Length: 414
Image (cartoon, rainbow, N blue to C red; front, side, top):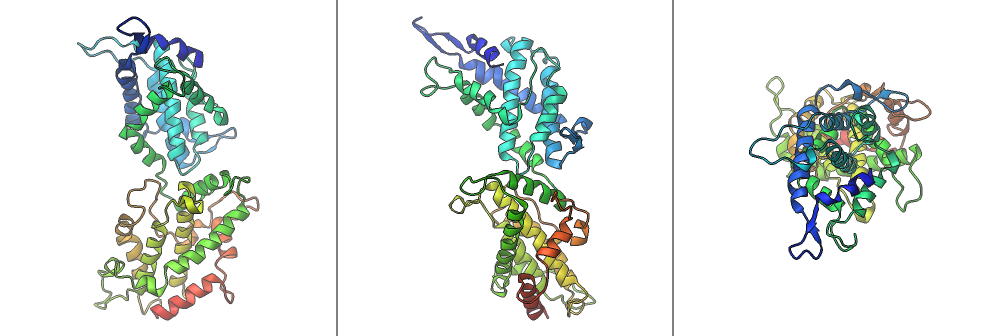
């Protein structure tokens, strides 16, 4: 494939005015390749959200695709289908394009879709490799020029683009084909739209599984091997402590939080106590304010992992406040306050946090742990998420973090 692209070099080079050398025919990139990308991207946006059943299962064993894997597969499936379909007729008075040639078109299009897939991998908070692989496997052999994804080895496509110079100089001193392709993709807002869809995971169970797998697949800080489930639960314990610190009485008394709990509907003409609402609002603000921090080894994936786990823990706290054993549950209308924070004020809290313009942030909704009782997270012991959280983190023995949180909540709310 790299040799095919190199053979196309005459398409983007031309003799300079003096005839002494060659110069870049930039029109090839800014017109022909740009038009091809717009065509492929348009097909992905238009058809990528449709029900392509080939993307429902991934991997050798045909396991159900995660929402992110399915979205990534559908977008690429639509792009590849467009690439291998008939080229659209030129609209007069437009001149014919060199990419009307099926071999040229499919070669360049394959490189564009590979570059797009790599951009998606970088922007995704979940692992989407299997979804990418499925799209290429399903459609990539249909044309004159086969287009395949090579998994961990796929960097050879990027290296190929980087090795092909545009202006006749060395790659280190001049533009390369990779520079041209990257510029086309980076300048397209449709990339961001598709990234948002790939990161749109609405179920908390799916979010936990997806971001945990991605976080575990990365090297530990310092690059010393990948993470384990033991590392996961150690980190979750730390997040419970941080969440406790973010929901203290002092934090709840922050004047910036007060508006989120001002308009709770009365019950039987009686005002609802705000304390439970303020506790949840403070917790939401705490998790939405988690952001990348390279000084403390918090990259985008780690930040998403920490936000997700704090969301699970905040829901566990909400369960404790609504438990029959909570002494003033009915008297203070605790459930009304909790629901108000999660349902009425959630978007507003997120909109004024570090998550306001971050498409890797999901909305932390109210999900009782009972709804996570069947959530399989992939641990070897087969324990479900609810069971694991309750066993490891929610015990109310003396001096446990959860007991401290609950005792303080009773004191402040009741």
